Each structure stands twice: as C-alpha cells, then as structure tokens.
Image (cartoon, rainbow, N blue to C red; front, side, top):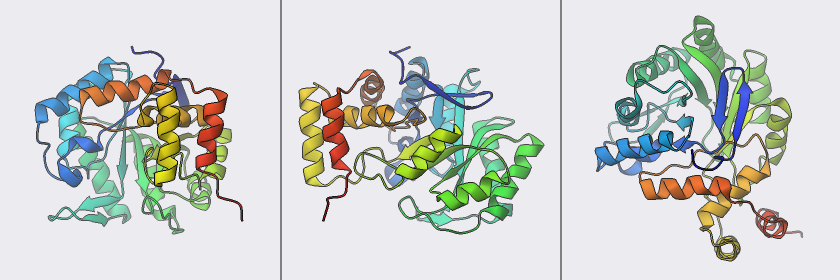
Length: 291
C-alpha cells in the first residue's frame, strides 16, 4: 500500500473507505460517452488503484453509459473483500450523449438493477441519489425518490444510501426515511458554499465527497495555488487534494484519471502534509472579498 492514502473513514458499520479513492468517470470516452480509446489501459488503471490499497471506487451506470461499470467488472471481478463500489442513480443518457435527469421512483429502481447486473453483484455497497445539477442543488422533496431506494435497501439489494448535489433540507428529509452515509457535493479550494453542510456531515459521521476537487479557479486563485505547489515541490493538483484531506476528517476524495502515472501522482497527495502557512494562503483563496 502506498503511504496512508489519507487514512480511512468509516461512516457506517461495514463501510470503511480509504480517504483517497478513485473516480471511474474518466474511463469512458470523450464527454463520458462511449468506449475509451484504450480499454486495456482503463483496466490497468483500475487494477493499479486497487493494488495501491484504494478501497473506494466511485462509478455510475450512466457513465458511458454502461461502459464504465463493465470495465470495472472486467478489471476487478470477483471483487476484493475490502473493496467498496459507490454508484449513483438519477440520470440516463440520450443517444446523442445528452444527460437526462431521470428520478421517477420506478426508474430509480430500474437503474439500481442495471448497476447490479453490469457490476456483477447481488447487492450494491452504496447508492447515491443524484438530485440537483452539480452546482445548483434544487429544493425538491426527496421523499418518493429516496423512499424507493430505501425499499431496495430493506430488500438487501443496497447496503447503504447517500445523496448527491443535495441541500441541507433534503439531507434532513432523507434522514427521516433511512440512514445517509455519504454526501457528494461541489466543494474545493475555490468553491466553499457548502462549509456549513461539511461541518454538519462531519458532526454526524457522514462521509463528504467533493465533486470537481480542482474546478472553478480564477487565474489569480490558480496563481496562488501554483506558487504554494512550487514551494512544496508538488503539483497544484496534489496541493488541492491535500488541502481537502486536511480540511475535515470526513472528506473522502475520488479524483479520476485514465492514466497510471496520474493515478500515482493523485495517491501521493495523501502523503503531502501542508504546513500551516501554506494552509493559510490556500484558505484565503476561497474567502469572499470583503466589501
């Protein structure tokens, strides 16, 4: 195992995740649609991630669609005992590659069965219900949608449930229906609108998985990040990932890549300890400017 992978976080009995996980989205073709250019390389990256000690892989049947889950099955099935595969439902893909939100309870049930079949498992470790767009959560009631998934959990087809692109009110509503073990929302150095939700999930023992750990930087913010990285002899990506791991103990990361070299670089970020002055500089990136 490489270093400590940012250690582990356990949001529920039987669910221990390495805090440095792996996001499989980039294993599909361009725009997360169609097959990858090099399927053998995609298989190799997944096997390298597991060989490095990663026990947390994030996927969805609408990546490809289907392609990514089939590659995961080809690469890793029968799955190692400690591996946890986290998938999400709430969308489908059009024939032209468009993203179609699809959250009718009956279709969510169908999507769960698609994931079971394509991953080749009898039960899914974690299913996240995708609610809003990544950067604009809505305030729709989750009762019918989450209730459908809770029913599948009671049947034993899903072990744990999570939410993606969720508001605080939706989290509260879902928790009245079934336990929530993960929240996947937009959060990174530059986008910290969810500080309050991050603090709440930490207090409640819920894993918080930031989307786009490197997205949304202005040129000035990127310059600060690059300067800190140069001083620490690390890449900007490694510094941004290390900052997230140090930000809160319940943060679990799922950076994605189709490159074995890039995978090694991401994993090394878990061993990067940021000194206090670097953290202070980086913290200033995401603060709103007074006045």
